[in-house]
Picture (cartoon, rainbow, N blue to C red):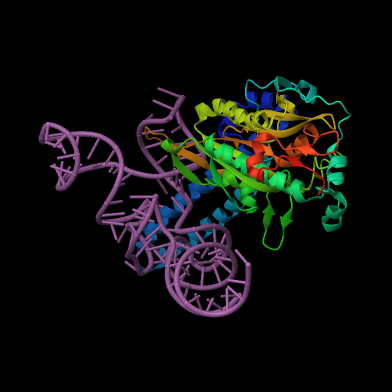
Length: 425
RNA sequence: GGAGAGGUGGCUGAGCGGUCGAAAGCGACGGUUUGCUAAACCGUUGAGGGGCGAGAAGCUCCUCCGAGGGUUCGAAUCCCUCCCUCUCCGCCA
């Protein structure tokens, strides 16, 4: 959420920011109108409340009688008027809040301009693509042949875009999860969490999925709970409505969770294989930091995601997203993409974002400066560390052998009980 | 799911429908004292919002005692609904 004070005082910069991300800057003017209307109503109501409070005290000290009855009657009228003003103010406020919650974050000054994917900047490419003396095959052929990936039965159980990992395929994914968590905890300084996979709507408003992207979410209507589309939701809401001490910052969390997405908006995209399912596993990293450190922390976050790829021996590249490609809540983002030799694509396995105070405002996450003073909003960051199915794809496709078996990357072997090769199940 | 108890400021914990944004204690912060610590004493110490204002100064007003409604001139205090916590019972991985 943007700062209403900035909208009031210097809206032009924000409009320019919205233009950069391809959003209509007119919303700012609409917000200003509603805000002015709201303030007017509040001012009127408060004036009358002050009067009522004063007179109520007078009434308390009065003798019974006509004069007192008179004053009470007058205050009853004032009360009715206040009721009307409050109701109108609440209405306007609701519109204002809803509008505010639908305005995306403003890009950080360093973000490359542009709206299209081509405008992203590839900042580095690391690792060698594997060499093959045969034509490497995509995972949607390798997996079923090895008996570690079952599309038909996934569809039978839950419909399209669901699949079942079997045997060593399942084990590979589980090993990746454990190994990544251990890496982030032992080497990168994160605290591991196991949060709920279903959360209240407030959480999703906090991170930015609601109200704008509700169509992409699964929801339990009975209890009004939502399946998380990413662990960013529970992890970023851990400290919602809290005031942290400055000494407690930065706080770094990581968690493994499944993620649930209806993918209504990306129907038809990435349909082959397990690139884009309605449910996928992910290890996520989330940081709460002091505002002046968030850009620096973003670089470290990206480095943590890269480290996963490096240690797995997967060639990857880092792209700095242009203004128009960043997600709703981000002010500065980098994607990490691994090369998958079979489908011959760069697959996004991580998206690391500095959200600035955008989520902190929504979720009311603050810290108290060490020198005292008023609580201030923290900055939040999140990044995949990393997404599982696409990492599984890259491992299968890049480590495949001519005979259709798959070599297990060395980093994972101890986690997989010493297994060196995935063969037919 | 059933029965009971309860939700008040960073914490503990008082609070007759008006003088309560809220006693008291603890903690924290500042100061006095002190060779250093400790103790003692004094003081300060919630959040959000509106208006005036160049102003994270100052002044002023409004709101907030789990959430939302209601009664009333006036609600932390009365009524209703919901949520949560604790204890007991039931059920269960």
